[in-house]
Image 1 (cartoon, helix red, strand yellow):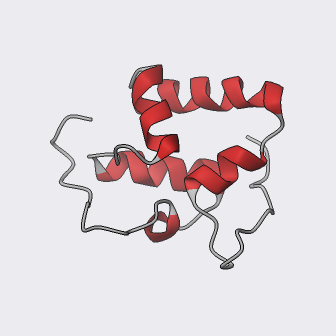
Image 2: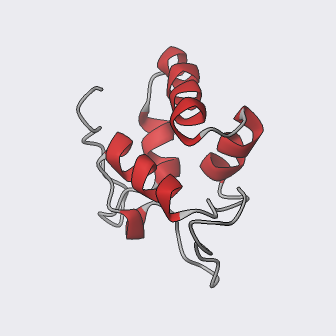
Length: 92
């Protein structure tokens, strides 16, 4: 896998959305497909995560996203409300 992107958001903490937006147009689809493969979820699920509409519901998904992007798990998503990862056993 490639080195994590070095772009930083304005507040100094990059989120998954910031990371995705910093990827050039054509590798974006490859990035989405790789997340789908590693997390065993569909493309709509990944797109919802990237847009911040839903959060991953398994800690393993957060670990995978963190490994792929180099972003600490706690910084992957803005925490405007108290959405959180529920457990290893819940569905996405």
